[in-house]
Image (cartoon, rainbow, N blue to C red):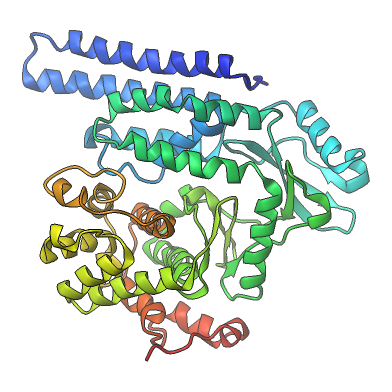
Length: 465
């Protein structure tokens, strides 16, 4: 069913207000329902009501799309311990559906936008065009088509008026974050709102995304197991983005694969984002699982480059210094590196051992020379030090800062960790990371395949002195 996307701030406020009001009523209803009950029955009621509230919020976010839906997507990879364990599976399942799909807009409207953006009827640009979208996301839909030269392509199209809707949502984020606070009291909603504001404007500009994807495609051209689909530049504009089609299976299918397959995909994901940050100094800052596909030949394609970052050499060196100090089990050096990078504005305010402990919960998995299986508990601990600063270490965390140039890097590392956790992946991540930290020779089959390929020879790292 084609549902019009409300674009005015008045309509968006009303819609978001209904979501927020519904959460308040459910919250109040839960309090009434638990009066006079025993502890066990109270918990059962709370679990049921919270699951209902989560489902209602997810459905509301999906209907709203835009910045509102971005909140759901931001939570779809990791809940950071903010959702009670009893309802976490329902929460993750509902948000996985939100991440991978959304209500659709009728093709007539989308077709009109495509033809307006590209100039001329569809048949002028495409030999075939499937009117059924293959994916629906927060600000647009993706269609499959064939060019006149025979190439299969994906056509990513923004919803008509979504730019106005997103900007209205940004002004109304307080309504959504309030309702989130009711079902997830530990969530740092201010940090989440700031994150969304920073991201959505960039993602509205498909011309910028095309530029980002071309840069990534150049970097990974001829790579043995990483694919970035090429952009069809002459058919792309501000609201339409055409890229070559990659046939692959998604994250939810990979989660059910055997351990060898899951570990292999996890290592490729880790290499793509880790090496991008610390070797190439350019990377996608949006590693949620909806953004990659696994082909039948084992290659992994990475999609969606709306958020793409180029990192200054100095910022990378600060990050490497922290990681090396952790790898060398030197708390004093960790503290010193954090201070030099600007994470601790007042070095005397944070004890050396406590600072190292906090850093360890975030990057210890990639600085340890041992096989480590990423677990939800590890991810929650990492998120507790970044997005959800609560618990025993909160007093220490408040005395730290996250420098602007490190913010996306840190968030991306934690989200990569979360994706690996959902795959239940195990590897010696520290040995892999040493390729970037120290310029070590590859220690895995994938690493050796990369290094021995023509791509690897062209992009060989410079050994660290």
